[in-house]
Image 1 (cartoon, rainbow, N blue to C red):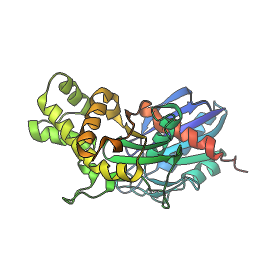
Image 2: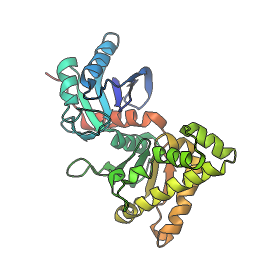
Image 3: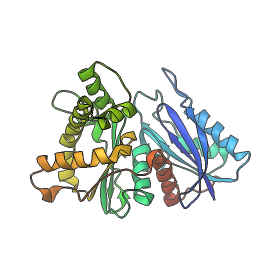
Image 4: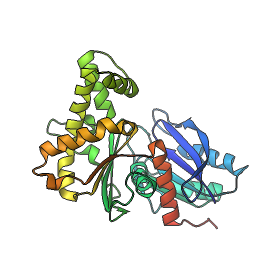
Length: 296
């Protein structure tokens, strides 16, 4: 049973064929997301991808992970940020089902990451987890009793938009973007994340200070969530998760200083283990759980 999985982001769309056990049988080349300054053509783009794959593969369905606030039962984008103009209101599920004749499911990208990690990754066997993705911004998802807590408006976990006392949002201080900006302020040099961590491992004090500063903002912002949810697992995702040996001990040390007692510390502080496959694996998990039926 082959499911086409799509991970829709503001800059690119990832696609692959997955089997129901979570194994990947084919990876497609990434495509630049079809967006312009005022609009997007994502619906047309994903239909084209699906139809192309249907010409040579007997697909049994389409599982989508997407940026934005998603109604996972109707498969509709309820709200999207400025990185994808005109995306709010897009009926992804209906578009695929009506134009490709395949059952389709849609889930928010961070929720999908959480589902993927709970199924086959670093959040396996966790009764509860607060899952974060650090990248351009800061996304979040909540797992309670092994199931997603989506909230009444499907926007639970969006910790990155929480306001700071200085007028900024948390994601403006706690994200990969913020990390690189802090380093640039200290050194007057703009570099990418890979270079920053290479320099940190080589002994660059400014890189270490920038990371500690960013994680300080992150752990400050996490304190209310940790006290409200008392999660068994705190999971850190995004590209930064590959640096788990640098990230995990720093977060644990900072939380140990800030929490009133170690009793409140999450049992597990882990970086996500599935990398950029987590969203597609989680989208597949939601497809299997929601069991969309083939359109008549």
